[in-house]
Length: 219
Image 1 (cartoon, one colour):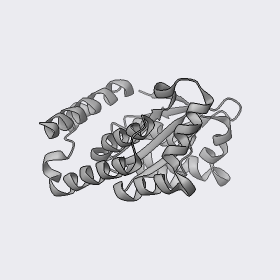
Image 2: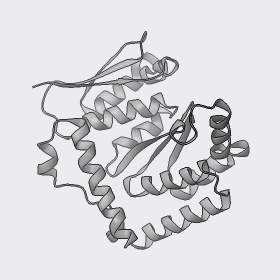
Image 3: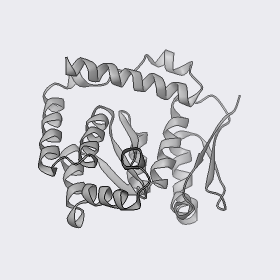
Image 4: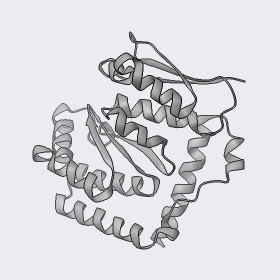
């Protein structure tokens, strides 16, 4: 039984997704055992799995790799999403500042920093990759770090001082390093995940498990 999922990316990123002589498209297909059908005129990408996948979340990984490339990440960084324990998150700037172009521009400047300094500090201190593209901020990192990086960036969006955010991230990373067993996100049993075929339902399961782990950490 085949399954398919539709993703749309900006037209200016289609060539990057395809890659030289189709190399990026082919790499994602090899990593996820999914087939990609890319419409260069619309930016629509259909992810197709013709058989039961060995990894039940391969379509989800393919979707996020495609989204990441569409949001400004290099293919090399997007491939990290396929690694066990790694994930992708996307912050919509307009959810915090509305549709004002000036407000969005200010947010992008705060997150990027002079000569990219702020983004570099976030990436280096957390071992992540961050991309600011249009009205979105993308994050690629280990699952147990994603929520903290997201929260740190949102603090910047809401006007927090840069040093305050740096200290927040440093503290959270130190906690993760010193207590990995407690903070590591425990996902649902593999047998349970195999039975889930809908990508949105699968994402909900993983998100709920991450939230449980975060609540335990806050107690």
